[in-house]
Length: 389
Length: 139
Image 1 (spheres, rainbow over the protein chains, first blue to last red):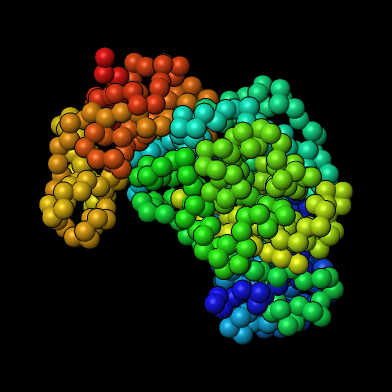
Image 2 (cartoon, one colour):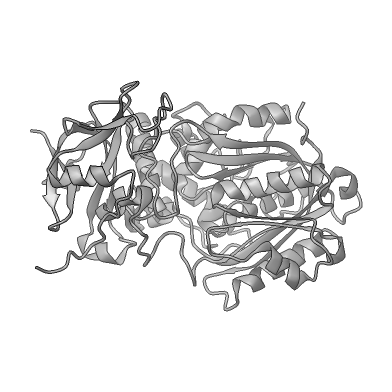
């Protein structure tokens, strides 16, 4: 019996504009996204008593957003350091605070000027060669993309995954983004476009990598009881899991190698999927739409395997055969994902899943979407959610 | 002598002996005296048996094989812009399955790299104070 199953719901979603140059402060993006999510929930700012966020030292504190919103009180606040994993953990943590009645209505946000200010891909950065990075930076290993490229290479060597299959992820998601007014990249691409895009860190081409953006996204969460009074149909959180396997490593965004990780053809999902599905009481077949954390294309391929949508090693052919398209077996990243909508980390995936489950995602609506999976990846560890209407 | 134009490692209490070994052209890896486990990057506790302060810096053969790699065509760090394309490798050292070290290759073109390629360490005295271990193909 899981104490948090079906106890909390997402009742509001909101975004500030996604762009390459917002022209405003991160606080502006955060406050605006939160305000929109609160309005979307049909709540007033006086109803909000908790603020939760995550960042990689590129954002603002929950207290600053509380001040902008003029919240009359704070009963809960949390600021996480972290990228992918934290984007799911914020939702899980907010749910825990709601279920224990520490707070009544919590806004969860991620906001950053990730293109016009600090770029998490590492462009122009000189990370400090200290701690584990002392063994990496002197060799020019200076980006998360370098670390994840070794996962892709391993998967290609072990299972024969091809660049064309990785490109199929980029092409499918760009097609989805073309139906998403929020997305920063909306022009459809072909596999030829993908293969001719410039190599960044072999095997990753430009179109294998997520697009850094300025923007903000926010959710409002509340208890299942209170969710019935909100404007839209609630989306319930049915499953949650956090963690990863053995041989973990510390990391900062520019200083990870995961060199001790036992098998680079796997990611965290293999280790947490069983608990996730057990808590939700479902199997992968029950998932109607999946928003996989897609910092690179290979992440989608590996997570399709590790979350049980195809056999281990078959993620490449699975994508190559078109199964991740809207209308396909497992519609994936229906908003375009981090690759095409924008690198807002995973709260944007939760927001899109909510939109789908509400039936409000036209023209990219997945027919009869009832249950969604969202994943939040940090390579060797991460988090995941199962949501339902 | 011109200043070395790229970042140098910043050793700490857990790692300084590694770099001192490199200066002597020795590849030293901490090995737990209680259970024999090698541990890299160095940690203050053995992850297998949790002994503390029982690791000995042990000279390893320097031999291993390529476990995975990338070829960087677009540098993020300004000091590496002139080096592209350059290779980063994860070498699996022969002594233990999860004993792996990040490095680069010498005398090998990117197209020649294959998974499992046997390699051995060479030492590059990049400054008077600092030596970087690198790897070359064993022919």
